[in-house]
Image 1 (cartoon, chains in turn blue, purple):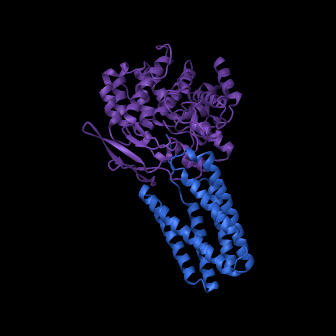
Image 2 (image 1 turned 30 degrees about the horizontal axis):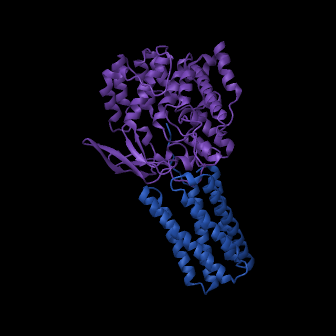
Length: 178
Length: 375
């Protein structure tokens, strides 16, 4: 990871903590809209970027189709997110929880893949995914108690942000080419 | 390639090509110095930063990956460690951005190797060492590019080591780990590689990082799916490639010394090593992390002289204490001029092919060198 990538990850982590705190302190309608807006923008940019990268570069790469699928799924999520501005809060929360749960499952699968391919930093990824998934599940259980679910979701968001920041400070293996 | 080949094997090749013990040592030192001459080192000895032939891990961690930063990385790694095989290689139905990266894939016997060896002819011995480093790396680093690129340099789990067994080979899946502190486990085919990074221009995707140190081991044979290969499997036979590298170095140095009239691609001086062929083969095929001791013993037998270990600071004092006008005449001064000239030549050729990934060579690179030689 370059210094720029580390700084970017730390900034994203700080934004996530901020959103988590906003939800904890002032869970208003505007807060929901703000989160939806940020999520929509982020997913759209990443989705379009992935699709363009596939068309111009990755379609010639072994295993490159995964980048196309990733881009399409992200764009799909972005469009769905953008359409949530006029629905009741409970659905927005449900959606955010599902996204979190989905991210948790993906994280666990990626950790297992890493374990199969390399014996590297899979444990942290794995535990992150599991915690994410459990938090999402807890939110679902308490979904009728709006405030409780929101507190759990916020804690999950802050936890993910801290993990991201910790990861930014980790040393990354780099093969010295001779 | 590591110190075993760039220093000790290069010494042996130079001696077989007809250089004296002292000249062979100087060539070997220069060849190995390419792997350590970073901007950090140059700043320590107050040398010009544009003569850097490598980048340290920390320098790379700080390296920018915007277009200008990428050009800087590409200039160093494509020139000295991943010399492109074919700057006009064609790939159908691809974007220019992809094609530019594709054309930087390293490989032996390309036009640039010829230009590299020709450039070293008639130049100080330091330039010969630089050329030998570059030539040898075209064999070891083949199929990877000296620019950060996921779509070119990535590898996946399809990676098998071919272990000699009876008359054939048995396949063993390679397991990659990310623990740099643990040495590669040759007995179980467990090797360290760099982390997967989905960012196209991440420095983790520079050169053969995703294949770990496998290209640097002379004994290893492996097959894998290169990211650029359209799902075609490549079998890399390092023992064969390293032997070719060794005999091509002898052939090239005989050309530089004026014994051979020309340097042509795909020619190897196998005759020169006929009496030591099995010995050399034995060193190359021995499963070990570093073959320095074996190459050193062979070199000392060849020349009957002691080959001193590579000492990075051997010529520092001479360079640092020289007057500004005399610096160019010191060992490191000549190395620096040779490195700048070689880098300038490669950047110029890449630029002339319409590829902007290495930027544009400053006229002063070549001019400075030629002016220096006319003095």
